[in-house]
Length: 156
Image (cartoon, rainbow, N blue to C red; front, side):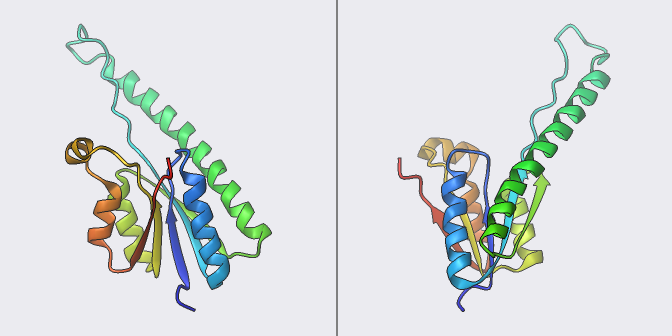
């Protein structure tokens, strides 16, 4: 058995199904344990209008931000459960995990603590200029992990 633990990092894009399917297939063939990971991004905090110079709207904005984050976390838990159910139906041992923050950092941290043999993830295919300014999660992961990394390219 070449891979006994596979970490699949998925986002909520249209490509996530393809990325999951690649990891799912490998886990089935290798009889490996699968961890399905998602990182919930932080959205910018709405600070109120420009006329709100005393920050009176900050308290309300923070409350709204917390409510939105709680709603998104519940959606993510339900979404991840659909992948776990699929694994269970096919006899694949699987768990899921999510973190809030920057994806590259958390994929590295989860990999260090869980110690997979392989990480499977997608690539958005940003332009070179966009990658220069925004960075690339897949590039970050490739350069910061000690295990094998499979980058699933978007066929479009």
